[in-house]
Length: 50
Image (cartoon, rainbow, N blue to C red; front, side, top):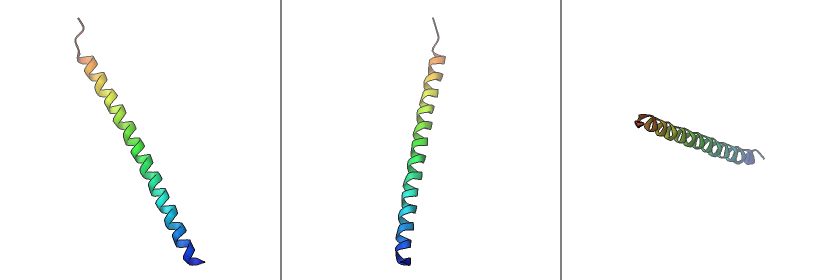
């Protein structure tokens, strides 16, 4: 049965890599959205009132 252990480990590692990549991509998206909101606030603050 030792031959079956390696494919199982490979599958777990592959699944872990996919999950990690998904988490990283989600965090990048949150940072991008937060950055967009900061830009909008800065532009709104520059517009003169009156």
